[in-house]
Image (tube, rainbow, N blue to C red; front, side, top):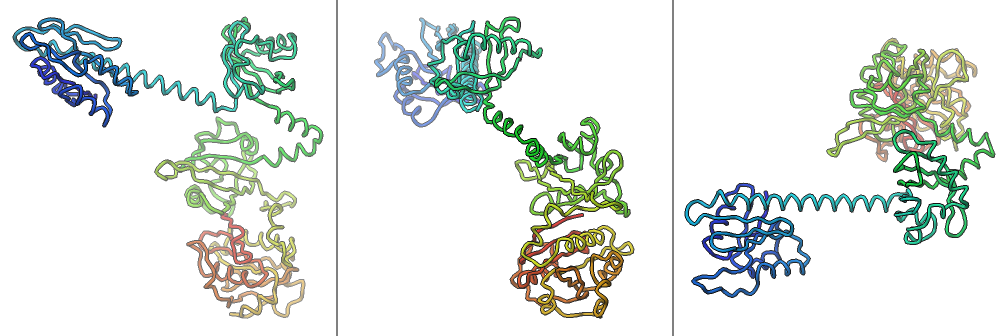
Length: 559
């Protein structure tokens, strides 16, 4: 709908025009009885177009005196900064008016008698043309403003060359060279290089690197105003690829810091390798159905796929086996990822490489939401935590984080490592095909025993040391068997089992855990608040492993 202010001279002719415009359908008309009234209306609102008389007509040979003509009204609008297009309706003898805008005008001949509406269609057409032109001008101005803002804000330097002379530079490029933009305009391109030979060499490199799309690129040094050098990557879109002297648009990227880092890394190959190794992670994006939308280069290399072989494929059957080795169906894994798509939880999955090798990957998942908050994709960042130091069963490595767990406790690292892997086996396998939930309390055993009580016979009481130390692989099956009973295992820092089936008697009122965690989790959090023990809980529902210390969740792992 086009908003039009119609300034009426109160004549019959203008009455016909006003009536026609009101019925045009796509024009919303606001009528003003005089220019004075129109001036008041323009103060309170804006219009797309203003239609106004050129001057008050004569009546019975007498010309009415007006305070302002249409042209004077137009000048008033411009003085107020009002850029609304104005169309003047100018009388040109009997039954004839001229319709004039800044750049468009037409004559409309009206019959002395009869219906004038067919002849007024030209006014509607002119209004629409004026509106479309104004809209196009606004869009061009917005685009130019956006382009100017982008070119000013970009960290890239940009300059244009015509016939070897610098014709335009953005602020960032001038800043890179430590000078004002005006200082560079009109200078020969050679002036930003140390010598004419350097300039010629760079121009040659740009031409020979032309890639068929009009772009050439090279690395070079430009001379700053203070005589120092800017190490940069130079890219150019040439006007004529056969002759770079004709000019083009040059894009400058400051790589000084990058070059410094590269040079520093070259001094120590070991340090360089460490940096590269630390930055390698598996990064995957998938939709809510588990279909892969992104696979980074490291992920492709790790799983030994090409991009075409995984993009669009489902994670089940590619990097996730349909079933675990214990027979559990993993078809609901994607839903679990969506559920744990944010927070402190770490999902540990047994994944599969292209050659069939099983690996343990620790995934941190982040939900990607649309503007309404709905999950549309899931970003998964994974790290290989497979313990390759051992032969036989593929295990989860705790090397990168177990020192945080046992710090400031009397628990030995190897004791925690063994108990944790027993927990992963209980979580994955259960017992006799049924899920099992249990608890292990490691370290500060005397305090833990004092704050708990026995709820069934302690099978480890009076046993020989070698029959109750967790590092003895021969008793692992016994531990799994007793894990089916209620209560917690109490193990001292050296790995000796003090008891199983211990009921924790500590008050849990000061514990605050996320929703979904039950009595077992609350009790373990409470006892780690008042003792220096490390608690590990295997959840019977879902098999998640939660590690507690100082009353807080230190790590939550979903297998």
